[in-house]
Each structure stands twice: as C-alpha cells, then as structure tokens.
Amino acid sequence: MNVLVYIETAEGKLKKSATEVLSYGKVIAKNSGGTLTALAIGDLTTDEQGKAGRFGADKVLHVTNDKLKQFINQAYASVVAEAAKQNNASVVIISNTFNGKAMAPRVAVKLKAGMVDGAVGLPDLSNGFKVRTSAFSGKAFADIELTSAIKVITVAPNSFKAEENQSAGTVETFSASVADSDFTAMVKEIVKASDKISLPEAEIVVSAGRGLKGPENWGMIEELATLLGAATACSKPVSDAHWRPHSEHVGQTGLAISPNLYIAIGISGAIQHLAGVSSSKTIVVINKDPEAPFFKAADYGIVGDAFEVVPKLIDEVKKFKAANG
Ligand SMILES: Cc1cc2nc3c(=O)[nH]c(=O)nc-3n(C[C@H](O)[C@H](O)[C@H](O)COP(=O)(O)OP(=O)(O)OC[C@H]3O[C@@H](n4cnc5c(N)ncnc54)[C@H](O)[C@@H]3O)c2cc1C
Image (cartoon, rainbow, N blue to C red; front, side, top):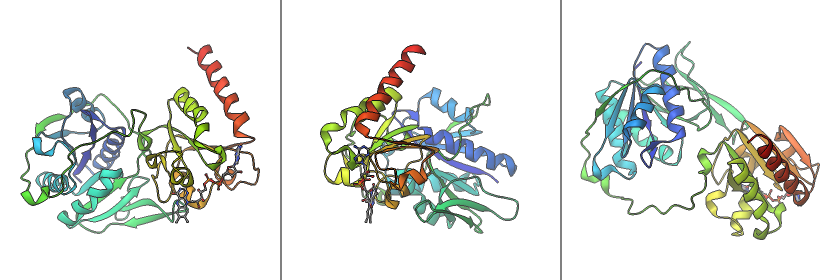
C-alpha cells in the first residue's frame, strides 16, 4: 500500500509529531510492500527535508507556493488530496494536532475515504484494516475497521515512537492546483502566546489546579517546569478564573495531551480532566487529600501539601542537575 504522510512544520523545521507520523507511515508502507511519500507545505530547510527521509520518507514532496505559507484548512486539504491521488496513496496519515484535526475530514471527503481519528496504534492488517483509537474520553479503546479503498488516519501525538535511521529520501517540488474558493478564510497574523515549550508537543508537563489557591502561587510551578524542560498546563477552573491562559487548559473541553510525564499538582482528577491527560505515559499526582480520584489514575502519588512538596522537588531536581552536570 502506498502511503502519503502530511508532515507539519514550524519555522522551517519538522514538528515532533511529524517525525512520529513519518515513522508510523513507514511501518505501514513496509508491511504492505508500498512506498512512503511525505508532503510538506511551506518553509522547510534542506536539512529538515533530509530529516524527513531519515524518519521514513522514500520521497519528500515540498510545496513552496507563497500563498500557502500559513495553514489554510481548505487549501491544505486540497493539496494533500491532490498529492494522494498523484501518488496512488491508499493510506493518508496526518497528525491529530489542532490543524490536522481540522483538515483530515476535508481530505477524507475529497478522497471518498473512510477515516479514523486519534489512532493510538498501528493498523492491524491481518484481517482487513483495523485501527485502534481511544473512546469515551480515554476510558476505552475502539477498534475501527476501514473498508474504503482509501483510508485517512490521524495519529495521536506521542502515541507512536519516531525512529531515525540512515536511509535518505529524494526531494521533489510539488505544485498542486488550488482553487480561489479554497482561500475564503485566510490567516492574517499569528501571535504566539508565549516562547515557552509548546504544550501539545511537550515530553513533560507540569500541571496545576485549584489546590494552588491563586495565580500568585504559580511561580513554583513555572520554576519546576523550567528545571525539567517542561510545558505548563492547568485545570479548567483555573483558566476560567483567569489564573492561567486558556491555552494551558487540558481535558475534555481543553487540549488532549499525552506527554511521557504528566505531573498533576493540586488537581482532583475529575473525569473531564482525565479525559485530556489519561493517555500520558507516566502520571505523578501531588494532592493533600489521599482520597483524591486522581490517585487512581496515577503511576506515582505523593500525599502532601503542594506548598511543601513542590519546593522540595525543586531543590532535589537542582541538586540532581548540579551533580550530573
Ligand atoms: C462539561 C464539563 C467539561 C469540563 N471540562 C473540563 C476540562 O476540560 N478540564 C478540566 O480540568 N476540568 C473540566 N471540567 C471541570 C471538572 O469537572 C472539575 O471541576 C475540574 O477539573 C476541577 O479542577 P481542579 O481539580 O483544579 O479543582 P478542585 O476540584 O477544586 O480540586 C482541587 C484539588 O486540589 C487539592 N488541594 C487543595 N489544596 C491543596 C494543597 N495545598 N496541596 C495539594 N493539593 C491540594 C484538593 O484536595 C483537590 O483534590 C469540566 C466540567 C464539565 C461539567
């Protein structure tokens, strides 16, 4: 099966989620005797094009059209569908990011394809084409069978390990015809919320809730996050109260993330919060109430007052870093 992977970029570089979908697509192409083509739209440095090859692409298609420098949902979907058709791709893979989620259904419609969103594992090709995704806010898995000739899959970030190797793909410029009607909603300007680590891409997330009592107490959360190279997140009531920006709100109505390490401080662990974080690889909970529901979802728990535990953690991380360079 020929596979087309849309790879997201930022400031000329591949996003981490792009390396994951490349490696994911590579396994499908390899197991089914097909090829993997990657499609990048917008700025991508020569080094990064090579990197796409090392993460699995046999061929990298690069679209350099100035009109497509910023993400435009309809236009990007047209380009991805066109690339899929021209390369006889029967599987199209997209990261389940903010942009990917918006674009994938449009691509599926254009290709008359069946679609699975938020895949958490590779397709099972032993008897048909079944893809596992999480369901009921992370409480269950659903194995979805795609029977259409073309399949579109969005892959949950951090659910598949990116693997770099020595192989290198070829690079070609790709120009697709995009209709004027695809440019009805244009991005005029992107204002970055902050220079901090991007929350959906972060390997480690330090998150805090109403147990922190007020916005003035977030200094220790930010200090711990900086020491660990982590992004910061928060529960919904915290962002509703404007203690933290809405861009940090995780859960059912906020961002869904799956970092390698999620540290939840002063968060009760309501089901709506867990819906966005329960697929984290390791969960550490710090809460003064031993009955807090979050402990049931935790790999490690500390029962204690955040205002005592977090400063101690900060000291220990500092000592560890000093001792280990
Ligand atoms: C439709 C709907 C959608 C929702 N979507 C979301 C969502 O996307 N994300 C989300 O987060 N919530 C969401 N909620 C809200 C959710 O139900 C909870 O109310 C919310 O997650 C609770 O936030 P919290 O844990 O920060 O606060 P609380 O429930 O007030 O819990 C605070 C916790 O801090 C602990 N604590 C207090 N002081 C300390 C201390 N000094 N040290 C250590 N621990 C301490 C307490 O023991 C407690 O467990 C949604 C609700 C609804 C109805």
